[in-house]
Amino acid sequence: MFSLADAEYFYCKKTKKVMHRKAYEKLLKQKTKDIKSYDGIEAVQRRMGFDFCYKDSSGKFTLPNGTALEGLTEETA
Image 1 (spheres, helix red, strand yellow):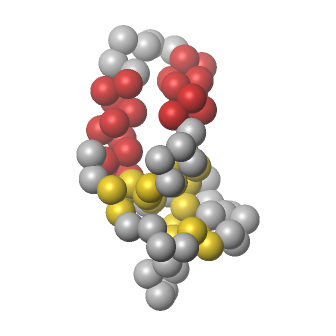
Image 2 (image 1 turned 30 degrees about the vertical axis):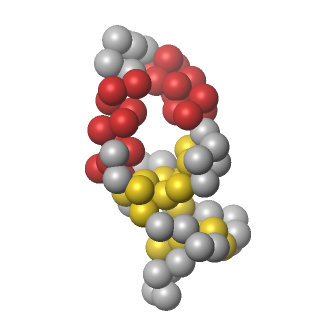
């Protein structure tokens, strides 16, 4: 089972795009620069609408529950 800390890719439910971990961390850092608490950062993550996903051997992105994310490409921030 994957955890958020293990994830290499993140899927945004709002934009329907996938973001690599480095781009996601950069975006999260921008959004949470004035927030000091873990709960505050977690709330921002929820509002951003991201879920972690992975790229399978065929190059398709898939959510942890096995749902394939068809036709997606990686977004850079």
